[in-house]
Length: 150
Image 1 (cartoon, rainbow, N blue to C red):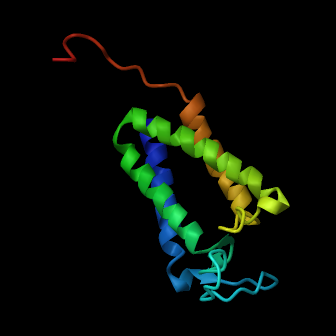
Image 2: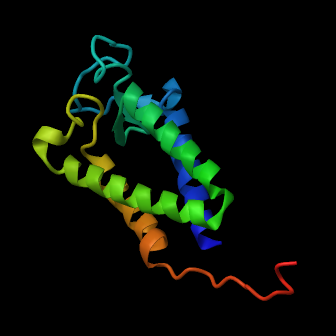
């Protein structure tokens, strides 16, 4: 059951982040940040570039990725096995993304979306949580008694 709740929690969190990235009241450009206009759409990277809650750099592609990852978490919450698979995949992908955020040439995901600043620690933290549940959390014993299977 813990697998499922982890997948559901991550799914809801990332869905909400994806939605927040489309609501102008949650977006801003903090002082000292890159001055790319929020509505500038001259490239994939600059389309919708801003900071969610003034903390996390994002753009249109990043918001779409958050929505996809979030919806997958909600859908894969359906069973213990699919939730474990989601948590493992999430942990691997987001650990890699966090590491990419530490490498200057990869901090824009090769020109697609920003993964620097607060995104790095947030991605590392969520990857660690998913890794614990996906790889290290003990699986719950299933009752395989004949009376239970009838």
